[in-house]
Length: 266
Length: 164
Image 1 (cartoon, rainbow over the protein chains, first blue to last red):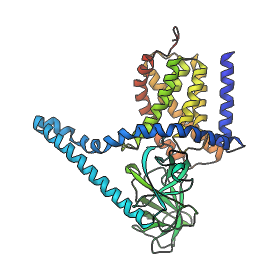
Image 2 (cartoon, each protein chain N blue to C red):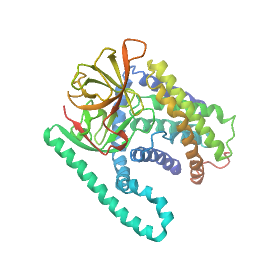
Image 3 (cartoon, each protein chain N blue to C red):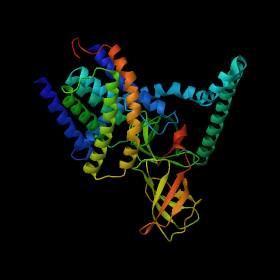
Image 4 (cartoon, rainbow over the protein chains, first blue to last red):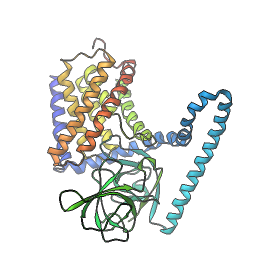
Protein backbone atom coordinates (compact mmCIF):
# COMPACT_ATOMS: atom_id res chain seq x y z
CA UNK A 1 0.00 0.00 0.00
CA UNK A 2 2.79 2.39 1.02
CA UNK A 3 4.77 1.43 -2.08
CA UNK A 4 1.78 2.15 -4.32
CA UNK A 5 1.35 5.56 -2.71
CA UNK A 6 5.02 6.37 -3.40
CA UNK A 7 4.65 5.33 -7.05
CA UNK A 8 1.51 7.47 -7.42
CA UNK A 9 3.38 10.44 -5.87
CA UNK A 10 6.26 9.84 -8.30
CA UNK A 11 3.86 9.83 -11.26
CA UNK A 12 2.30 13.09 -10.02
CA UNK A 13 5.79 14.68 -9.70
CA UNK A 14 6.59 13.39 -13.18
CA UNK A 15 3.44 15.02 -14.58
CA UNK A 16 4.08 18.33 -12.77
CA UNK A 17 7.72 18.44 -13.93
CA UNK A 18 6.55 17.78 -17.49
CA UNK A 19 4.16 20.74 -17.17
CA UNK A 20 7.06 22.84 -15.87
CA UNK A 21 9.23 21.73 -18.76
CA UNK A 22 6.51 22.57 -21.25
CA UNK A 23 5.98 25.93 -19.52
CA UNK A 24 2.26 25.26 -19.08
CA UNK A 25 0.15 26.75 -16.33
CA UNK A 26 0.95 28.93 -13.32
CA UNK A 27 3.24 26.26 -11.84
CA UNK A 28 6.30 27.58 -13.71
CA UNK A 29 6.38 30.98 -11.95
CA UNK A 30 5.95 29.48 -8.49
CA UNK A 31 8.62 26.91 -9.25
CA UNK A 32 11.15 29.51 -10.36
CA UNK A 33 10.47 31.49 -7.16
CA UNK A 34 11.06 28.34 -5.09
CA UNK A 35 14.25 27.68 -7.06
CA UNK A 36 15.58 31.17 -6.32
CA UNK A 37 14.75 30.69 -2.63
CA UNK A 38 16.72 27.45 -2.43
CA UNK A 39 19.50 28.87 -4.58
CA UNK A 40 20.03 31.47 -1.85
CA UNK A 41 20.98 28.56 0.42
CA UNK A 42 23.18 26.79 -2.14
CA UNK A 43 24.95 30.03 -3.21
CA UNK A 44 27.07 30.61 -0.07
CA UNK A 45 27.88 26.86 0.06
CA UNK A 46 29.14 27.00 -3.52
CA UNK A 47 31.19 30.09 -2.74
CA UNK A 48 32.69 28.39 0.33
CA UNK A 49 33.46 25.17 -1.55
CA UNK A 50 34.95 27.12 -4.45
CA UNK A 51 37.41 29.14 -2.31
CA UNK A 52 39.96 26.37 -1.61
CA UNK A 53 39.84 25.26 -5.27
CA UNK A 54 40.60 28.82 -6.38
CA UNK A 55 43.49 28.97 -3.92
CA UNK A 56 45.10 25.74 -5.10
CA UNK A 57 44.21 26.13 -8.76
CA UNK A 58 47.09 28.43 -9.67
CA UNK A 59 49.72 26.31 -7.91
CA UNK A 60 48.33 22.95 -9.04
CA UNK A 61 47.99 24.13 -12.61
CA UNK A 62 51.73 24.47 -13.10
CA UNK A 63 52.90 21.97 -10.51
CA UNK A 64 51.29 18.85 -11.99
CA UNK A 65 53.64 19.10 -14.96
CA UNK A 66 56.60 18.61 -12.64
CA UNK A 67 55.64 15.15 -11.35
CA UNK A 68 57.72 13.26 -13.93
CA UNK A 69 60.73 15.49 -13.43
CA UNK A 70 60.61 14.93 -9.69
CA UNK A 71 60.64 11.15 -10.11
CA UNK A 72 63.73 11.29 -12.35
CA UNK A 73 65.89 13.65 -10.44
CA UNK A 74 65.41 12.80 -6.77
CA UNK A 75 66.31 15.06 -3.94
CA UNK A 76 67.82 17.86 -6.00
CA UNK A 77 64.74 18.06 -8.13
CA UNK A 78 62.56 18.07 -5.02
CA UNK A 79 64.35 21.19 -3.84
CA UNK A 80 63.98 22.65 -7.29
CA UNK A 81 60.30 21.78 -7.30
CA UNK A 82 59.77 23.63 -4.05
CA UNK A 83 61.46 26.69 -5.53
CA UNK A 84 59.48 26.33 -8.70
CA UNK A 85 56.31 25.97 -6.70
CA UNK A 86 57.04 29.28 -5.02
CA UNK A 87 57.94 30.75 -8.38
CA UNK A 88 54.73 29.42 -9.86
CA UNK A 89 52.79 31.08 -7.09
CA UNK A 90 54.49 34.39 -7.89
CA UNK A 91 53.92 33.95 -11.62
CA UNK A 92 50.27 33.15 -10.98
CA UNK A 93 49.95 36.22 -8.79
CA UNK A 94 51.58 38.31 -11.50
CA UNK A 95 49.21 36.87 -14.11
CA UNK A 96 46.23 37.59 -11.86
CA UNK A 97 47.55 41.11 -11.27
CA UNK A 98 47.84 41.69 -15.00
CA UNK A 99 44.36 40.28 -15.59
CA UNK A 100 42.83 42.46 -12.88
CA UNK A 101 44.71 45.54 -14.17
CA UNK A 102 43.20 44.96 -17.61
CA UNK A 103 39.76 44.51 -16.06
CA UNK A 104 40.23 47.74 -14.11
CA UNK A 105 41.33 49.60 -17.22
CA UNK A 106 38.33 48.23 -19.08
CA UNK A 107 36.03 49.25 -16.22
CA UNK A 108 37.54 52.78 -16.14
CA UNK A 109 36.49 53.27 -19.75
CA UNK A 110 32.85 52.86 -18.83
CA UNK A 111 32.50 53.71 -15.12
CA UNK A 112 29.38 52.62 -13.31
CA UNK A 113 28.21 50.30 -16.03
CA UNK A 114 30.28 47.22 -15.23
CA UNK A 115 30.15 44.85 -12.28
CA UNK A 116 33.21 42.63 -11.76
CA UNK A 117 32.57 39.06 -10.61
CA UNK A 118 34.48 35.83 -10.03
CA UNK A 119 33.58 32.48 -11.56
CA UNK A 120 32.79 30.05 -8.71
CA UNK A 121 31.18 27.13 -10.49
CA UNK A 122 29.76 25.68 -13.64
CA UNK A 123 26.81 23.65 -14.87
CA UNK A 124 26.62 20.22 -13.20
CA UNK A 125 25.47 18.59 -16.42
CA UNK A 126 27.27 18.36 -19.73
CA UNK A 127 24.06 19.07 -21.61
CA UNK A 128 24.04 22.80 -20.91
CA UNK A 129 26.88 25.30 -20.77
CA UNK A 130 26.80 27.82 -17.97
CA UNK A 131 29.08 29.38 -15.41
CA UNK A 132 28.08 30.52 -11.94
CA UNK A 133 29.46 33.86 -10.71
CA UNK A 134 29.71 35.20 -7.17
CA UNK A 135 27.56 38.31 -7.64
CA UNK A 136 23.79 38.37 -7.66
CA UNK A 137 20.69 40.42 -7.22
CA UNK A 138 22.18 42.28 -4.26
CA UNK A 139 24.97 43.60 -6.48
CA UNK A 140 22.60 45.00 -9.08
CA UNK A 141 22.67 42.10 -11.51
CA UNK A 142 19.44 41.34 -13.34
CA UNK A 143 18.40 38.70 -15.87
CA UNK A 144 19.46 39.20 -19.50
CA UNK A 145 22.42 41.43 -18.59
CA UNK A 146 25.39 40.73 -20.90
CA UNK A 147 28.51 39.22 -19.38
CA UNK A 148 31.88 40.02 -20.95
CA UNK A 149 35.65 40.03 -20.45
CA UNK A 150 38.17 42.41 -22.06
CA UNK A 151 38.62 39.66 -24.73
CA UNK A 152 34.96 39.52 -25.71
CA UNK A 153 31.43 38.36 -24.95
CA UNK A 154 30.93 35.50 -22.46
CA UNK A 155 27.15 35.21 -22.45
CA UNK A 156 24.11 36.52 -20.60
CA UNK A 157 22.72 36.28 -17.08
CA UNK A 158 19.81 33.86 -17.10
CA UNK A 159 19.02 33.18 -13.46
CA UNK A 160 19.84 35.62 -10.67
CA UNK A 161 19.45 35.17 -6.95
CA UNK A 162 20.72 37.13 -3.96
CA UNK A 163 24.20 35.57 -3.94
CA UNK A 164 25.04 34.31 -7.36
CA UNK A 165 24.13 34.39 -11.03
CA UNK A 166 23.96 31.69 -13.67
CA UNK A 167 25.43 32.87 -16.94
CA UNK A 168 24.53 30.99 -20.11
CA UNK A 169 27.69 31.04 -22.20
CA UNK A 170 27.86 31.51 -25.96
CA UNK A 171 28.50 27.84 -26.73
CA UNK A 172 25.23 26.67 -25.11
CA UNK A 173 22.82 25.32 -27.70
CA UNK A 174 20.16 27.78 -26.53
CA UNK A 175 22.41 30.81 -27.04
CA UNK A 176 22.05 33.12 -30.06
CA UNK A 177 23.52 36.60 -30.73
CA UNK A 178 23.01 39.00 -33.59
CA UNK A 179 26.46 39.84 -35.01
CA UNK A 180 28.19 41.89 -37.69
CA UNK A 181 31.41 41.18 -39.51
CA UNK A 182 33.77 44.05 -38.63
CA UNK A 183 34.19 46.48 -41.51
CA UNK A 184 31.78 44.60 -43.78
CA UNK A 185 28.05 44.47 -44.33
CA UNK A 186 27.61 40.76 -43.56
CA UNK A 187 25.38 40.01 -40.62
CA UNK A 188 24.08 36.81 -39.05
CA UNK A 189 22.99 35.00 -35.92
CA UNK A 190 25.76 33.40 -33.92
CA UNK A 191 24.43 30.22 -32.36
CA UNK A 192 25.97 27.89 -29.77
CA UNK A 193 26.67 24.31 -30.76
CA UNK A 194 27.52 22.76 -27.40
CA UNK A 195 31.12 22.43 -28.63
CA UNK A 196 34.08 24.82 -28.53
CA UNK A 197 33.15 26.56 -31.77
CA UNK A 198 30.05 28.54 -32.76
CA UNK A 199 27.96 28.54 -35.90
CA UNK A 200 27.03 31.74 -37.75
CA UNK A 201 23.62 31.25 -39.29
CA UNK A 202 21.77 33.03 -42.08
CA UNK A 203 24.85 34.29 -43.91
CA UNK A 204 24.03 34.47 -47.60
CA UNK A 205 26.43 32.80 -50.00
CA UNK A 206 27.08 36.11 -51.75
CA UNK A 207 27.79 37.94 -48.46
CA UNK A 208 31.29 39.34 -48.05
CA UNK A 209 32.77 37.05 -45.40
CA UNK A 210 36.03 35.11 -45.20
CA UNK A 211 38.24 33.22 -42.77
CA UNK A 212 39.91 35.55 -40.28
CA UNK A 213 37.07 38.08 -40.20
CA UNK A 214 36.27 39.35 -36.72
CA UNK A 215 32.71 39.46 -35.41
CA UNK A 216 31.15 42.08 -33.16
CA UNK A 217 27.70 42.33 -31.60
CA UNK A 218 25.17 44.29 -33.65
CA UNK A 219 23.12 45.51 -30.68
CA UNK A 220 19.93 44.52 -32.46
CA UNK A 221 19.03 41.56 -30.29
CA UNK A 222 18.15 43.81 -27.36
CA UNK A 223 20.59 42.10 -25.01
CA UNK A 224 24.16 42.84 -26.06
CA UNK A 225 25.23 46.44 -26.72
CA UNK A 226 26.70 47.15 -30.14
CA UNK A 227 30.41 46.67 -30.81
CA UNK A 228 31.46 43.98 -28.32
CA UNK A 229 33.99 41.55 -29.82
CA UNK A 230 32.66 38.00 -30.05
CA UNK A 231 34.92 35.78 -32.14
CA UNK A 232 36.80 35.14 -35.34
CA UNK A 233 35.64 33.27 -38.45
CA UNK A 234 37.65 30.05 -38.81
CA UNK A 235 35.92 28.48 -41.81
CA UNK A 236 33.44 29.47 -44.52
CA UNK A 237 31.83 26.78 -46.67
CA UNK A 238 29.75 28.05 -49.58
CA UNK A 239 29.59 24.66 -51.33
CA UNK A 240 26.51 23.54 -49.44
CA UNK A 241 22.94 23.08 -50.53
CA UNK A 242 20.64 26.05 -49.88
CA UNK A 243 20.78 29.82 -49.70
CA UNK A 244 23.14 30.16 -46.77
CA UNK A 245 26.84 29.51 -46.27
CA UNK A 246 28.16 27.43 -43.37
CA UNK A 247 30.31 29.63 -41.17
CA UNK A 248 32.25 28.37 -38.18
CA UNK A 249 33.43 30.82 -35.55
CA UNK A 250 35.94 30.53 -32.70
CA UNK A 251 34.98 32.70 -29.71
CA UNK A 252 37.66 35.06 -28.37
CA UNK A 253 37.14 33.76 -24.84
CA UNK A 254 38.32 30.37 -23.67
CA UNK A 255 35.37 29.46 -21.47
CA UNK A 256 37.34 26.78 -19.62
CA UNK A 257 39.77 29.35 -18.33
CA UNK A 258 37.52 32.12 -17.09
CA UNK A 259 38.37 33.45 -13.66
CA UNK A 260 36.84 36.92 -13.64
CA UNK A 261 34.08 38.40 -15.75
CA UNK A 262 32.29 41.73 -16.07
CA UNK A 263 28.53 42.11 -16.04
CA UNK A 264 27.24 45.03 -18.14
CA UNK A 265 24.59 47.00 -16.25
CA UNK A 266 21.77 48.04 -18.54
CA UNK B 1 17.00 8.65 10.24
CA UNK B 2 19.93 10.96 11.08
CA UNK B 3 22.18 8.90 8.81
CA UNK B 4 19.68 9.18 5.95
CA UNK B 5 19.48 12.97 6.33
CA UNK B 6 23.27 13.08 6.48
CA UNK B 7 23.47 11.00 3.28
CA UNK B 8 21.04 13.36 1.51
CA UNK B 9 23.00 16.44 2.59
CA UNK B 10 26.19 14.67 1.45
CA UNK B 11 24.62 14.01 -1.97
CA UNK B 12 23.75 17.69 -2.45
CA UNK B 13 27.21 18.71 -1.18
CA UNK B 14 28.84 16.34 -3.67
CA UNK B 15 27.00 18.07 -6.50
CA UNK B 16 27.98 21.54 -5.26
CA UNK B 17 31.57 20.27 -5.00
CA UNK B 18 31.36 18.93 -8.55
CA UNK B 19 30.10 22.28 -9.84
CA UNK B 20 32.96 24.16 -8.12
CA UNK B 21 35.65 21.61 -8.98
CA UNK B 22 34.83 21.25 -12.67
CA UNK B 23 35.08 24.99 -13.27
CA UNK B 24 38.79 24.69 -12.36
CA UNK B 25 39.52 21.42 -14.17
CA UNK B 26 40.32 21.49 -17.89
CA UNK B 27 38.07 18.46 -18.47
CA UNK B 28 35.50 18.90 -21.17
CA UNK B 29 34.74 15.42 -22.44
CA UNK B 30 32.86 14.14 -19.43
CA UNK B 31 30.98 15.11 -16.30
CA UNK B 32 29.80 12.34 -13.98
CA UNK B 33 26.23 12.37 -12.76
CA UNK B 34 26.71 11.72 -9.05
CA UNK B 35 22.97 11.82 -8.49
CA UNK B 36 22.27 8.63 -10.46
CA UNK B 37 24.13 6.18 -8.15
CA UNK B 38 22.51 7.91 -5.17
CA UNK B 39 19.00 7.41 -6.58
CA UNK B 40 19.76 3.76 -7.44
CA UNK B 41 21.19 3.00 -3.99
CA UNK B 42 18.34 4.69 -2.14
CA UNK B 43 15.65 2.89 -4.17
CA UNK B 44 17.26 -0.54 -4.22
CA UNK B 45 18.65 -0.74 -0.71
CA UNK B 46 16.52 1.65 1.33
CA UNK B 47 12.80 2.15 0.79
CA UNK B 48 10.81 3.40 -2.25
CA UNK B 49 9.97 6.54 -0.24
CA UNK B 50 13.69 7.20 0.36
CA UNK B 51 14.33 6.64 -3.34
CA UNK B 52 11.68 9.16 -4.35
CA UNK B 53 12.94 11.79 -1.88
CA UNK B 54 16.51 11.28 -3.16
CA UNK B 55 15.41 11.45 -6.82
CA UNK B 56 13.45 14.66 -6.25
CA UNK B 57 16.18 16.30 -4.18
CA UNK B 58 18.94 15.35 -6.63
CA UNK B 59 16.90 16.62 -9.59
CA UNK B 60 16.05 19.85 -7.81
CA UNK B 61 19.65 20.47 -6.68
CA UNK B 62 20.89 19.85 -10.21
CA UNK B 63 18.35 22.33 -11.57
CA UNK B 64 19.66 24.96 -9.15
CA UNK B 65 23.18 24.34 -10.47
CA UNK B 66 22.26 24.25 -14.15
CA UNK B 67 20.70 26.38 -16.87
CA UNK B 68 18.59 23.49 -18.08
CA UNK B 69 14.88 24.03 -18.72
CA UNK B 70 12.82 23.92 -15.49
CA UNK B 71 11.48 20.49 -14.63
CA UNK B 72 13.73 18.56 -17.02
CA UNK B 73 16.21 17.21 -14.48
CA UNK B 74 13.51 16.42 -11.90
CA UNK B 75 11.59 14.57 -14.62
CA UNK B 76 14.58 12.44 -15.63
CA UNK B 77 15.57 11.63 -12.05
CA UNK B 78 12.00 10.66 -11.01
CA UNK B 79 11.73 8.55 -14.18
CA UNK B 80 14.96 6.79 -13.20
CA UNK B 81 13.45 6.20 -9.75
CA UNK B 82 10.39 4.55 -11.35
CA UNK B 83 12.71 2.39 -13.48
CA UNK B 84 14.50 1.35 -10.28
CA UNK B 85 11.15 0.43 -8.71
CA UNK B 86 10.41 -1.75 -11.75
CA UNK B 87 13.81 -3.46 -11.52
CA UNK B 88 13.87 -3.70 -7.72
CA UNK B 89 12.17 -7.09 -7.51
CA UNK B 90 13.81 -8.40 -10.69
CA UNK B 91 17.43 -7.54 -10.07
CA UNK B 92 19.69 -8.47 -7.19
CA UNK B 93 22.65 -6.13 -6.79
CA UNK B 94 25.33 -7.97 -4.88
CA UNK B 95 28.56 -6.37 -6.06
CA UNK B 96 29.92 -2.85 -6.65
CA UNK B 97 30.58 -3.86 -10.27
CA UNK B 98 26.94 -4.57 -10.97
CA UNK B 99 26.02 -1.35 -9.15
CA UNK B 100 28.49 0.54 -11.36
CA UNK B 101 27.15 -1.09 -14.53
CA UNK B 102 23.58 -0.19 -13.63
CA UNK B 103 24.65 3.38 -12.84
CA UNK B 104 26.30 3.63 -16.27
CA UNK B 105 23.24 2.19 -18.02
CA UNK B 106 20.99 4.62 -16.19
CA UNK B 107 23.10 7.60 -17.27
CA UNK B 108 22.62 6.43 -20.88
CA UNK B 109 18.90 5.97 -20.25
CA UNK B 110 18.72 9.45 -18.72
CA UNK B 111 20.38 10.99 -21.78
CA UNK B 112 17.98 9.24 -24.17
CA UNK B 113 15.08 10.28 -21.96
CA UNK B 114 16.16 13.93 -22.01
CA UNK B 115 16.52 13.88 -25.79
CA UNK B 116 13.02 12.38 -26.10
CA UNK B 117 11.63 14.92 -23.63
CA UNK B 118 13.20 17.87 -25.48
CA UNK B 119 12.06 16.55 -28.84
CA UNK B 120 8.49 15.57 -27.99
CA UNK B 121 7.89 18.08 -25.19
CA UNK B 122 9.25 21.20 -26.90
CA UNK B 123 10.06 20.10 -30.41
CA UNK B 124 13.69 21.09 -29.88
CA UNK B 125 16.44 19.21 -31.61
CA UNK B 126 19.31 21.63 -30.87
CA UNK B 127 20.65 19.85 -27.80
CA UNK B 128 20.36 16.32 -29.20
CA UNK B 129 23.88 16.15 -30.63
CA UNK B 130 25.41 17.63 -27.46
CA UNK B 131 23.58 15.15 -25.22
CA UNK B 132 24.41 12.16 -27.41
CA UNK B 133 28.04 13.22 -27.74
CA UNK B 134 28.57 13.28 -23.99
CA UNK B 135 26.31 10.41 -22.91
CA UNK B 136 28.83 7.60 -23.35
CA UNK B 137 31.81 9.28 -21.62
CA UNK B 138 29.47 10.51 -18.87
CA UNK B 139 28.17 6.96 -18.39
CA UNK B 140 31.67 5.49 -18.17
CA UNK B 141 32.93 8.09 -15.68
CA UNK B 142 29.76 7.80 -13.57
CA UNK B 143 30.20 4.01 -13.55
CA UNK B 144 33.79 4.33 -12.33
CA UNK B 145 32.71 6.78 -9.66
CA UNK B 146 29.86 4.48 -8.60
CA UNK B 147 32.45 1.77 -7.91
CA UNK B 148 33.87 4.01 -5.20
CA UNK B 149 30.55 5.41 -4.01
CA UNK B 150 29.05 1.96 -3.32
CA UNK B 151 31.48 1.11 -0.49
CA UNK B 152 31.05 4.65 0.88
CA UNK B 153 27.28 4.16 1.06
CA UNK B 154 27.80 0.73 2.64
CA UNK B 155 30.10 2.23 5.26
CA UNK B 156 27.47 4.78 6.20
CA UNK B 157 25.32 1.75 7.19
CA UNK B 158 22.17 3.26 5.72
CA UNK B 159 20.62 -0.09 4.92
CA UNK B 160 18.09 -1.40 7.42
CA UNK B 161 19.03 -4.83 8.85
CA UNK B 162 17.98 -7.72 6.62
CA UNK B 163 17.66 -5.79 3.36
CA UNK B 164 19.78 -7.33 0.62
